[in-house]
Length: 226
Length: 259
Image (cartoon, rainbow over all chains, first blue to last red; front, side):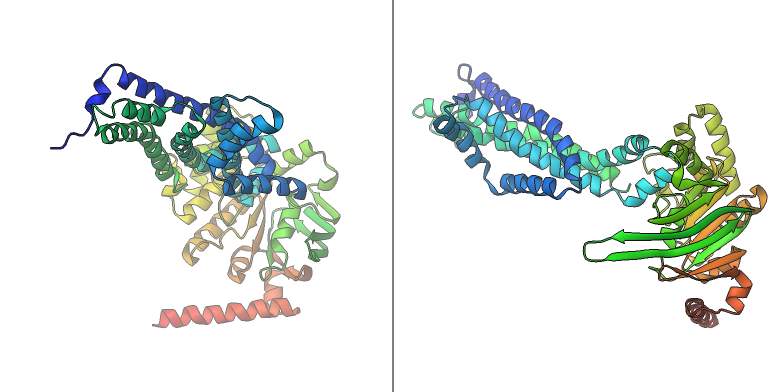
C-alpha cells in the first residue's frame, strides 16, 4: 500500500494547527452568516415593497453579487481599498465584509422569495377572521415564511462555509492554508503529504457541512407537504 | 330586514395599461336569514363583490352597509370587530398547516382573547356541528378537501358570525362532496339563522341551496330575483348562457350514468 502521507498530521502540533485553521474558516463564515441574517431579513422585507426605485437598487445589488466571483470581491475589498481610500483592512475583516456582502444579498433574496410565495388568500382569510395586520404577520405569514426559509438558508450557510477557502488568497491562514504550510514544511520527509493533508481538510469540511446539509434536507422533507 | 346593502358600488383596478372595471354601479341587498347566491362566469366580478362585503376590497365608489353600519366609514378597529360577524370561507380552505384541526378552529378565538379552555370546548362543539369531532387531532394534510372545508366552516363559526360569505367554497371539490358541504351550509343557515352569501360559477350550487340569486355579467348586475324565477324565466343573456351550460353539463352526467 502506498504511503498516504497521513503521518505528518501526528508530527508536533500539526493536527492542532489544522484544527486551528478550521476554526478560522468557521469563525469567518459564522460571523458573516450572522451579519447576513441580521441584514438580509430586513432587506428581504424591503425588497417586497412595490416602489420601483427600491426594486431597481436591490435588483442591481443582487445582480452584482451574483455576477461577481467572490474572489474578485475579496481582491477589490482587500487590495483595492488600500490604494483608493488608504484603508489598511486586515485580511480577516476584509473576508467578513465580502462574505457579509454576498450573504446579505442571497439571504434577502431568499426572504423575498419566501414572502411572495405566501398566496394572497392567506392574508385575506386571516383578515376576514378579524385579525389586525400585526397579528396576520406574526401568526399567519411569519410561521409559513420561516418554514420555507429555513431549509434554504441552512443551505446558504454550507455554501458560505466552503467558499471561505478562498480567503487564503488574501493571506488569511485558514484550514486550507495551514494544510499547505504543513505540506511545504514536510516536502522532503513526507513527499506524499499532499494526499493525506488535503484529504483530512476535505474530511474536516465534510464533518462541518454534512450535518448542516442533512438538517436542511430533513426540514425540507418534513415541511414539504405543508 | 336587509343585513347587507350594497349601494352603487364601483370597483376599478388600476393596471399599468388600462383601468379594469371589476364592478360598475352595483346595488343589491341581502335579507337576514336567507341564502343569497351570486353567479356569473369567471371574470364577472363575483369575487370582488363578495370581498366588498367585508371590505377586503375597498370599493372605488359607493357604500357597503352591513347590519346597519357603513363599513367604509368604520375605523380599522371597528372594521376588525365587524369582520368577526362576517365569516368567510374560501376555495382553497386556507387552514394553518402547522396546526391540527382543533387548534385551527381555536385560532380566531385565541386572537380574540378567549381563554384556552373555553376556546377548546367551543371548538369541539363546532367540530361536532360540522361532523368532524373524531378528526380533532389530525393535521390538515391528513384530510380530504371536503373535510378541510368543514374545518374552515367550523373555524368561521368560532367567531359567532351572523353572516358567512362563501367564495367558490365548493369549486375545488368533487360533485358528491359539494353536495355534503352544501347541505352543511343549509343546516347552519336553518339551525343558527346565519345569513349566507354564496359566490359560485356553478348553477347547481345556487339551485340546491339559494333562496335568491344575482347574476353578474362583466361587472354589472344582469338580473336578480328568486332562484326559480331567474332560472325558469331568464331575461338576461348572462343568465341564459349559464342555463345552457348547466343543461349541457346535465346531459353529460346523464350520458355518463347511462353507460
